Image (cartoon, rainbow, N blue to C red; front, top):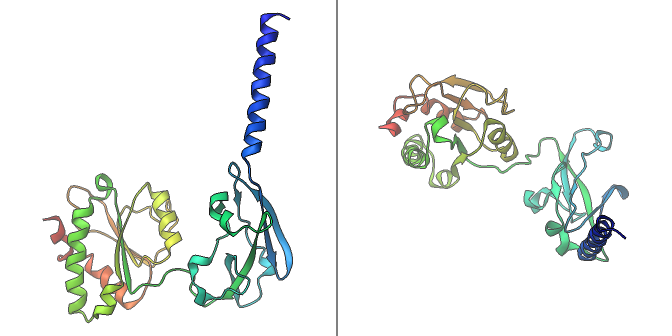
Length: 251
């Protein structure tokens, strides 16, 4: 046998041995999703392979209801919390689910709620801001100053201590597509500041109203204020972010 053939045989043997070793490290878990007692989906996860949870077939959603997600508890209700839900399109990893395995498998169940049921976190008020200083003119120090000013302002407008304990100021990092996905996934941002005019067109974030800032954010121009939810406290916040008082954070 010549040297080339010898090398080929050796490499093939190593490759086969490596594949066998990797196979030996796999711990397969069968993920079975049941809907109304029927098997809706089945897939396998292990240390090296994940699955993407399937989209719910609209024909299985009753009138007046909407799909909430998949859960480990077939008797789940909204009172058990949103954290117990796995979403359609979510990547499911072996590490995420292995502790729930029984006899080599995990069962998930489809869950539905009435269309009026909120499926996002609920807060008194949330201000989102674009945490990309070179683009938005906003950074952690500016956001902290704004939050401090807003807490005083909201209290003057009648917000209670309980309200203010549930007031959130949250920065979003990444390009516009990334922050748009994060904002939509959270679902609770009422007002967003620091983006340009493309938060919906590029980021996919629907809005109720938007206004271009009359002044620059520091050295950054052409910023917009977005109203995402039209509730009284949100509109109060929206109007504040367009007022002269808002621009004091840049001084």
